[in-house]
Structures are given as structure tokens and as C-alpha cells.
Image (cartoon, rainbow, N blue to C red; front, side, top):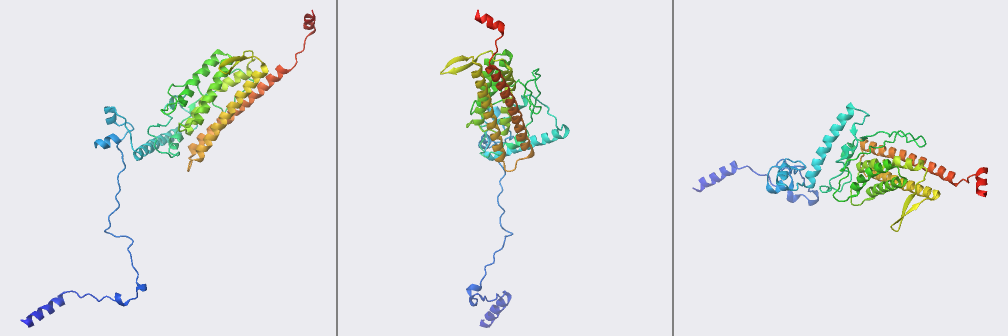
Length: 364
């Protein structure tokens, strides 16, 4: 029995693989190197989650959402449809890509032509502040590049004293009621409401009314540019400049008027008519200076928006270039108006000669 047991143990030891003895104990520690694999074939892949495409209400209810800005389920239930930041940003990227594709197709067929009629295409040019959760100022420039300028034409004016350069585009006097829309501030709606008052003042042809309407539009444009409650973009500046251009005919009328009518000034809530020609000329020059200040603010704001872009596209640069061209041309108009006012003031300040017949009448 002992012999058979020893034989069995020997047979088992022969069947088992022999392991080589480790020499680790005899190797100094400073010669030991830990080798690490760059990657394991059996390692689990990182979990990639699908982007959130459903609105908040559909996600809470765990139902399928169509992914539109206002989904059908929220419209049917008459509740506010809102998305998270990621979903809203992706939806805007898809919409902007579609807009850019349509613009590239249109520009390939109608190069150099403007087919937009008036301001009807500008009804949706403002951002939606209720869903505006991304503080990045570069996000709206894709929609900015897709902006189509309105079809504008020069007014038929028989006056040859002051001529507007051909590059200046005077916008149509018809503005929709919903040109500006913002739930945070009323500055844009107030500016849009001032455009019809300019047309009414020009129809009445009263110097006092034209002067007042022009000043109101200038202050409205300044409020839009300097507003801290609204998030302004280049599209806002272009639309603001379009309303500002309505004052072109007003400035020409003020410069060419005989200044026979009085200009009303407000002192402490009391309106005082100003009949002195020199004082009226000073008021007109003050109005021109105010218009120049507004143009400087619009130009500076546009350059700031362009500098904030990481890589401004060619269409964004074209929009800013168009804005600068219009501002430059309007400065030329203001310079011509200022020269005409200076000439009128010089003529009024010159001493009038009395004829001999008038001298005899006065002596008698």
C-alpha cells in the first residue's frame, strides 16, 4: 500500500504543470519595473448617453415628444413647453443649419438681389428671452448671418439742396405692429410705435411736429442700444438703424424749411415756443449732435459684437459692413444738413439793407 500511494503521488506530480521558481526575491528593488498596459481589451467602454430631445413635461410624464419648440402634447394640454439647455441648444443648431442651407440655395440663384418686402420678414428677429439660458454671446450669430435685408428704395424728393448718397437705403414707412417683441422690456415696441408718428408729422408739414418726432425716434434708438434688460444682437442693430433712417426726410425738411414756424421747447413741464432764428438754429444743431451720438453708439455696439465672435463668418462681417456703410452715409446727410443750417443762420444774421422808399416811409 505505501508503495502504491507513493506511485500515485508521483504520477499526479508528473501530470500537474510545473511552475518555474520566482527570482523576484534575488532581484534588487530598484531594478523592478511595473509594466502597465495602455488599454485592456476586456475593459468596459464609456457610457455614452443620447442627447435629451424631449421637453421637460414629456420627460416627467415619460412619453414620446416630437421635439418641436412647442410640442404637440404641450399645445394640446395648454401648458408651457420648455427644454433643458442641451436640448434647446441642439434644436437651435438644427434650425440655424436649415436656415443657412436655405440662404445658400437662394443666394446661388439670386446673387446680389434683395427679395424681402419691407419689414414683414423681421417679425421674428428677436430672441426668445424665456428660453434664452445660454450666456454665450456667440450663439445667435448663425441666425444673424441668415438675416435678409429689406427691399428698400429711395424716396422721390424734388429737393436738390441736399441729396442722400446712393448707398443709403431708406426703409419703407410701413412697419408691422409686432416688429419688436420682448417680454423683458418695452424699448423695442416703443421704438416701433414711433415710426408711424414720423410719417404723420411729415404729412402735416409742421416744423414743431417734425422736430418733436425726430427727437423721439433718436431717443428711442438710444434706449434700445443702451438697454441693459434686453440682449441685443446685430440683427437688432440693423432693425434699429432701419427705424432711424425714417428721420432722413425729417432732417432734410428741417434744414430746408424757412423756419417761420416756432419750435416748442419744454421748460419744467411748460412748453415755450421759440421764434428767434438763432435759437432755432441752435436747437437744430443740438438735434444733429444727438443723432451723431446715436450713430456712434450703434457703430460701437456692432464692432463689439463682431469682436466677441471667436471666428466671425463672412455673412456676419457683411452685416456689420452693411451697418457701417449706412451709418457713414447718414453721417454725410447730417453734415449736409448742418451746412445748410449754418447758411440759413448766416443769412438771418446778415444786416438787412433799407431801400430809400422804406426810409422815407419810416421818416414820415
